[in-house]
Length: 84
Image 1 (cartoon, helix red, strand yellow):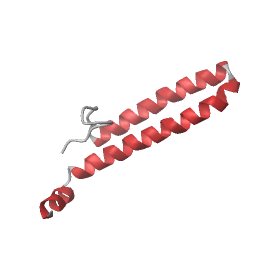
Image 2 (cartoon, rainbow, N blue to C red):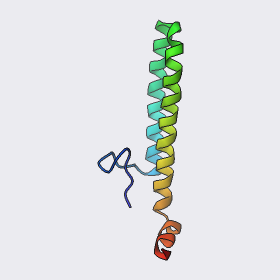
Image 3 (cartoon, one colour):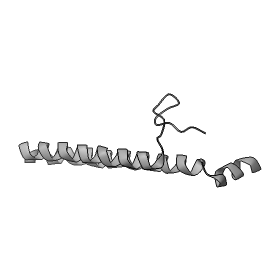
Image 4 (spheres, rainbow, N blue to C red):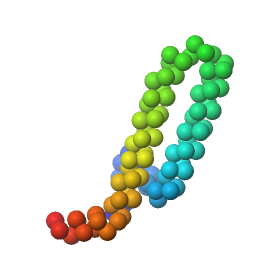
């Protein structure tokens, strides 16, 4: 079974370890951009905070999808599918 992000034509979810590395790299990149923005304009925090929450929600969704894809590849999921 293949899992994709967003839709049937979306990006295929990478293996668990790669997905976690991608999430970590994405977070590091975003954190750097947020820090630069705040260094230039500390008053931007009010606009930035909701963006930070949204970014973490999206990263959590990617993590959950990766864990689901990983679990679906295991024997417990295959056994459950055979029983239906």
